[in-house]
Structure formats: C-alpha cells, structure tokens
Image 1 (tube, rainbow, N blue to C red):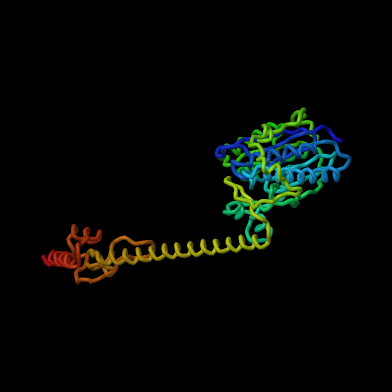
Image 2 (cartoon, rainbow, N blue to C red):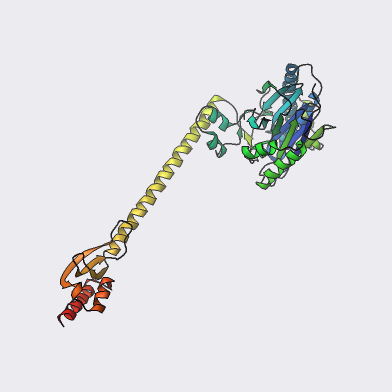
Length: 416
C-alpha cells in the first residue's frame, strides 16, 4: 500500500432545506456520500442507514476486485435494511438514497455508484466525472434527445431512475475499477454541490495546493454563496501527495449518519407478521427537490412523450408570442405612418420653390416620412431674407388649409 490517505469530509444543511438528508464518510480506505430522498419523513434516515451499513466495508483488501465485490455487497445489504425499516415503519414508505463510494487498494480504486451523487477525478490539471448520473435527463442526453446544456435546465433534471430503497430487492449498481496514482485528487459529492457549483469552479478549487479539508471548505462556501438550495456534502481524497494536508487520523462521519437515528418504534403488528422476503412498496414522490420514478421502458417512453409534448407546446407558445409581437410592430408602424401623413409643413422643394409637404420633417434612417404635396410658382430665392430663412427651416402647419394660407402669404410678400 502506498502512503496513507489524506482525506476530508464536510456536510451542510444548505440555506433552504429544513434538515440534512445527506450523509458522508471518510475512513481508512473507504469514502462514501449518500443523498437521501423521501422528504422530511425519511431522507435523512435512508442516507444514515446506508452509510452506517456501508462503512462496515472499511477494511484492508488483497485486491481491488475483492474490494469491488465488498462494496456491491454492502450496498445491496443497505438496500435490504432500508426495505426492512420501511416494513416496520410504514410512515417511511418512499424513502431512498443515492450512494457513491470508493475503496482504495494500493494504486487501484474500486467504485460503486447508484443515483445522482457524483464521483470526480482531478488529475494533471483535468477534471473528469467518472460516475454516470442515474437520472431521467441523463437518459435523454445519452440517447441524443437533449444536450448537456439543456439537461442543466430541464424540468425533470432531478428525477432519479435508480436508488437504494424499498422499491427493488436487487437494484442495479454500477461497480468498476480504475487506476490511481500519486497526485490524484478524488471528489465524491451530492448534487447539492455539483448542481450548484460550475465545473470550472470545481476544477479550480481542486487544483489548489491546499489540503483536502481546506478545499472541501472552499467548495462548501461556493455552494452556500450560490444559494445552496439543497444539502451539500463533499468527501475529498488525495492520493499519496505529501505536499497536501495531514493524514486523516480517525474515520470521519458527517451529515445525518453522524447523529443517532430518530424515528418511531416498530408497530407490533408489523413485527409479528414480518415476511421472510422483502416487501416492496409503491414509491411516492419526495417532498424535496429530488425524487424517484420507476425505471421501466414504458414509463420512460411516457416521460419522453410528455416532454416532447411540452416542447411542442413551448414552441407553439413562442411562435404565437412572436407572431403577436410582429403584428403589434406592423400595426404600430402603419398607424404611425398614417399619423405622419396627416401632418403638413411648408418648405423648399428640390426645384427650389416654396412647396407644401405632407408628412413630418424627421426621417427613420433611409425611410423618408414626407413628400411634396403641392408646389407653388414662388421661388425661395425671391423671398425676403427673413421669409427665406423660415422656409428653408420649414414652417409647421396645423393642417392643409393652414399650409396653403402660409404659401399665399409668402406669395403676397414677393409681389410687394
């Protein structure tokens, strides 16, 4: 085994949620983040149960494959505990949790993941997300239906397709093994961090020549500064880089798993009639911003069709709105032009004669808003100096009759 791990874990309730439903663990070689769901009734219980069970896997392993199997087994065991807890406490029906975890075995990392918490690797100036979100919008991205940018603002971006809970006795858990090397920095976090802090800011924070605790605190502050609408949990692991921080001397548990579980006693009837196998309950949407939906192909097709209908409605709304704006502009131009053509003034025609103009003196760029309505026989040059100056500067008239009266006066001035 290489040098001892340097790690840190932080968790915060955020600025909007009423309780912390996240749990985190930084141990000897095991590092975990769980983000509970199910609203106030059970999200914190779910993540705490999961992390408490999974951290039992924090021990030495001969190979990374052995650690990978232990992680998968721990997550499945946690899933069974959640189902049993719901059976004894029906008020917790619908609770579940995401889990992202890794175990270091020498220069290899065994990983396990379910849900939308994330695992990142920062190496040689590059940040890479190594886990895949088990969300509805990620399915849309993978199928090419929407872009990564569209996924960030999609109305169903918080809908989970896979979680640990009382829904599936054998949940599909992603497990794999990666190589690691001195200088690597691993980040496991809940979506309260990754959904708020931009990738460039994550990268810059992880690039800092500071210990994992300082970096974790910095990321937490960035999330809080951005409003922290959800709980925020981050676990950072540095691989054998002696320039970064102190060795974590004791395992550290944060979030809801750091406090004793608090929920009611099992109902006697439930204890007496416990079934030997798991009892699955229909899931109910969480009261928080993240919830779970069943991952059946029919249901996915239904969601996709619903989103396509929503997209068509948005396009139709935009088209109607745009058409209304265009019509309003055209009508404004028409009414405006008609108003200008009700105005008259006296000025000098291109031929140098006194003329009555219909319209207004101002132009809109290349658009001329006046034209010669009637040209007299009086030349501007023949006018007295003062009248000449007035005509060249144009003389406003209230209407056509007033303009004709002004021309008559100018004509009389020339005759005199």
